[in-house]
Length: 113
Image (cartoon, rainbow, N blue to C red):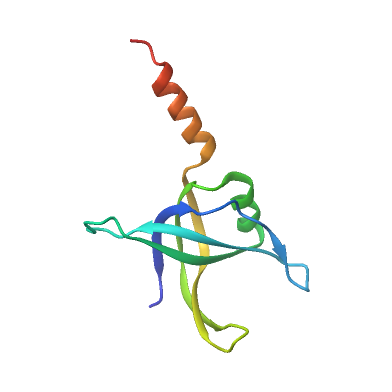
């Protein structure tokens, strides 16, 4: 069974691209902190999302947004014929977008004492 589940933060704003057949997709990296790591090591996981989900990610996620995603690990050959790995995303849950983060920070700084 090939299933990938992770919670992390997007490393940059999501950009939509199109295939020659006009299908929309986005490639992005998810920064995921390793559990039980003393030094708080982080992995940067390449991800790919297609069609409507790509549009939703672009609309609601920006650099630093926290998301949970589910997908599968896929291999492919790059232009130099080397095998690379990425996660093909099938579902995504928005945990903390930049708008939510700004709102939470504002509320914490302006709550009544």
